[in-house]
Length: 564
Image (cartoon, rainbow, N blue to C red; front, side, top):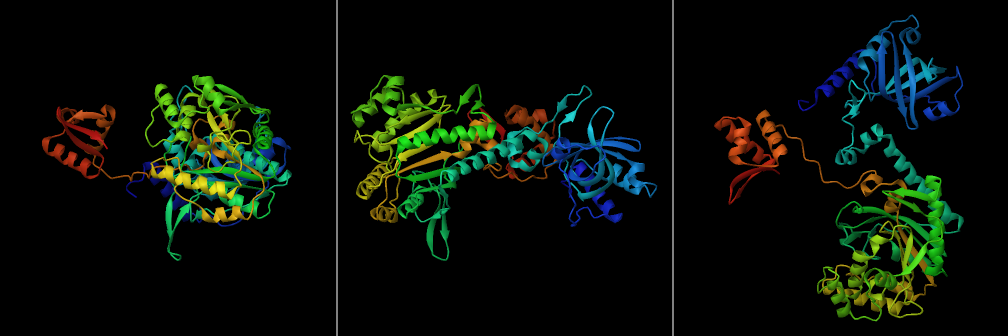
């Protein structure tokens, strides 16, 4: 309790006083809600009686009257409190004590009242009765207004917002709009597939082999079976099993997990959509994909166009189509066709691209494209016909055995969709898997280290010609909502664990403030700035070191102290 802020202590005191008055601050009763704020604004009827509920977000108390704002799931509505109208000659305790003294911004309350229009034309609710539904014990991080009407201390620190998304959603209404659009995207895509006659399925998240992609998996152990299991890195091989089993078209919104790096476009847990349709090829899938994305863009934003940074993207079909070889030749002047691995490696070096001995032909080509070409595609563009080495699950190109029937869709220099004419020759597939093992043994981190023998057995039963596609849903919604970071479109992105708050002395707090301003200071300089006596100084440095808040580094230039 000693670590609570002054405001939190005051709110707990109010909580106790409410209970002393016989008021349950967390009642279990069903509240008879009749209206949301949006319905009131759209269907306003003067004098209509309503029951609303929400979070108290502001109030202006003037004597026996007060205007306040109530926020529910649809927005805010103004409410008017008048002591005499609420208490109607009864004991004034409810208004004087509860409303004026014991309620706080952030509390949930239920309101009975009637609709009216203020003198300035504001649609409002005149309160006839109110009920405390939930007492908030922490103050909301709302911006503060200065004497000039300027707002300060807004809740806009990204790390705090992601850690405390619940507070972020309350005080930053535009954040909620992003997630409403995210749901619209999923619904639009799902309805598009369903209308086409395709079947939504679920496949295992815990898998005995991490197949369908080359990625480092999260590993766990099943105690009862006494076997290792892996969190899904992709669902591709399971969906193809269902095509073998007789489904003509299946899709899944798949939570995938990859134990790899994190940045503005990658989170270890992410959502992909994968769809597989029998008797189709990648040319059909390109037509299908662009119609799908145009439909989704309109469903989310009301138009096929979306702003992303400084660019206006138009998802209206059709999209440009460029082979990978033509793209590399266009932007580098180098033709990868019929070139050996050594020739491509030397060409990459000449372009200033870092390469090493572990990179096979496919990896080298991928590096050249990623470094020199990918970022140039702003409008939706299909990059097609990838070299065979880059696509172990993809069917050989019908016109060129060195290539595969694959495309990736590029938008603003990023891939958002990947699709194949699927490889359904079980002998070829086994050879490709074995080749991947050899590449992995050489140190190629893009090669898979596992062979899914059950999947190969499924192919041996026969899989019809099939086209499949995966779309990164998180990245797509980033483009549709103009968000540069994947953390902005995930409710709860992965974060480092919070450091526990430590109770440290005032002297230690002062030293940390000096360090934060300077980042790093010589030991004697810091001691001088702190103004501490020798005894307190030694004690403070020990305290900071023990609590892992600062450290002393010895260099050739002397001893320096810095924040951990």
